[in-house]
Amino acid sequence: MPGNPSLHECSKEVQGEFLDAASLLEQGKVLSMPLSRNLSSIFHGLHELRFKDRGGQVRFFYFIKKGDAIYLLHAMKKKTRELILRRSRRFEMAWKETSFEKLAKSLGVNPAEVREKQKLIELIAEARKDKGISQAILAKKLGVSQGRIAQIESGVGTAKVSFDVLLNVLRELGFDFKIVPKRVA
Image 1 (cartoon, rainbow, N blue to C red):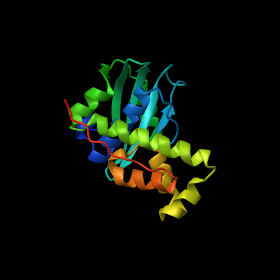
Image 2: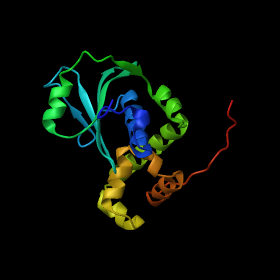
Image 3: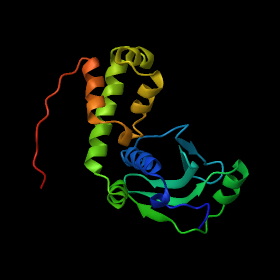
Image 4: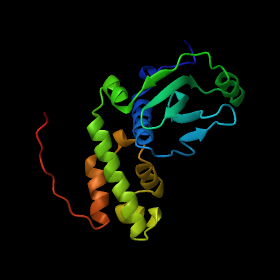
């Protein structure tokens, strides 16, 4: 249906960011603007995920059943605010229950890689705050922009961040690490 894309029809960038957001939601994290918007004023428990790529803005409307599943209600390409409000009130659409694991498999993404990157990202944010270092100061030490540090710390966009980058940030924060190989079952 035109204007109502499925996740599989979105760009790889939007797919990756959506998967990261789903992983964070499933872990019980609360997402906020500009990524997620609470739409309880429209309908109790309704939320919106907001992504942007070269093709424009894509919105996903969802409900969360704590610790169990994410219910995707609707996806659309954003055109105007009026369109969002009008379509958001159409709840006769079928809900699609899903989980992070199911989403990752359907997109051909390794869920363990996403989760491991998010663990390292959480460690980076905590370590930076514990040391009393601002994102701007850390960025200057690493030779990147403050916006890049903010993007990394958001936990969304892990496909754009390599383990190498995350380990270099941790090294700058005073961490040492050892990689231990593990056989997969």
